[in-house]
Image (cartoon, rainbow, N blue to C red; front, side, top):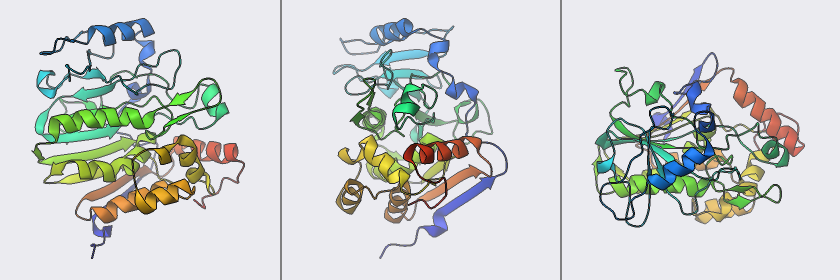
Length: 336
């Protein structure tokens, strides 16, 4: 018999705006600080096909710090990264941003303790139909600048995660980090699942054999929904003494049956993120983020799950309206 997860579930409501543990830098496109050509050069020069210590390119004037490109012989391993220095890792493979002008994808690592791991999913809107995508205003489309505040401030003694190795799953696919689809407009391809898997695989490669003292799974805004959907998979992949899932600033409240359709259209049902009854539910267009999050809580009753949310989050309200209007349903809170 599975213990009820409810004693380990917390929901905090904050009065004010979004409670994301970052700062405005998190949503500033890296293109404002570095050109596409610079990123391409960074990805090229960050590789070392001969193996051994990777070549890092320091760019003091830019916002992406250092880089490393993964190859079959160069894994950009944790032991070669500078502690507490943000490093962009370009995984290659199927990973890519939604933007056709700059498809290069990277995830970001802040090296810290080898016994403490924090995986966080970046937020940045959603592009879920032709208008939201082609308007280029509803989701981040490129790798973003290095955040420096909140959980990313490694020198702040009030930051409870400052000693963790932090893996930031950068968001530039507009699909809540779970997409696997090619759209019939604008040559748009969304590979959020592949992007997230590349960062998670790197973390697993560097931490799988370790029994972690602490595992933290988090996410902000769109990344909050991703943390809820990925939590079961991540909790099953690592060994740990203590784990917590912290979903920050997005509750899975959508109008009507819109979130189920959104997930189906994103191609999440074609990914190996779940199986069995959850897979059947997804294929039938009935799977919700709530279903996945509750499944994770039931499967891991001794893990602490928490949501932090504000009483009046303008971003959530805007996307609630946008998804409803784009789907042709009343903007209520029936949630399917």
